[in-house]
Amino acid sequence: MLKVPLAVELSAVIVGALSGATHAAERKADVVGTFVLALATGVGGGLLRDILIRAGPPVALSGPYYLPVVAAAALVAVVFAGSVARLTRSLAVVDALLLGLWTVMGTEQTLAHGLPVTSAVFVGTLTAVGGGVMRDVLTGQTPAILLRGELHATAAFAGAVVYALIRSTGLPRWVAELATVATAASLRLAARRWHITAPTPAEISERVRRLHGRRPRGPAPPLAGRTRWRRDDAAP
Image (cartoon, rainbow, N blue to C red):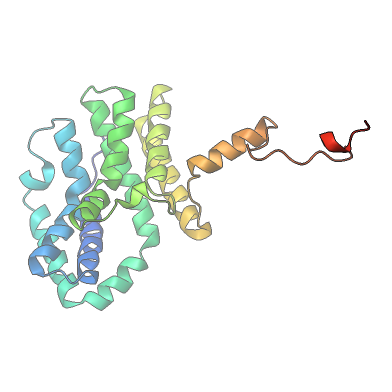
């Protein structure tokens, strides 16, 4: 199983907590609300993962460092709101790498607990995006992953699928881990750079019709070159 250095995992928690605290500041939340959103965004994905796979007490609660780190990040965001907001917007590469890292940790730990591959892909994706989902739900918003936008959950999903496929071939675990982080991070960065979004059902349907040479349903075009006779125009 992937053993992520504590400093790296706490860095991921800090980036997520700062993002959640910034989200709270934009909505004029008080100190308590800021801490709650920082906590949800920073460790929400890990909490959901540990609960779903029944890994015992969630690491975010059993570990001695996670809650103090979240509290410190929330305090920094409250005191230096403007600077933190600019900082979080400039951490695109770090955010993309952490997306891949959380995907690996979720997928790998799910497989280690004996769950099937499909469950591992689901939990790996949820681990990567769960914090953002909890943040949006707590603020009364539709979760961003349910709205059209630059690829995020899709990037995590692709990374989780890559991990499962590589592990099924018998290649070393570290190959799957690196490939997963590279896949998720590359897709996320490409989506941010070129504003790539997932297609809507209507767009998929239109492409399928074009592929099969079918035109969309609609009013029939007028018949060209043909005279329509009325009964009273006919010869007696």
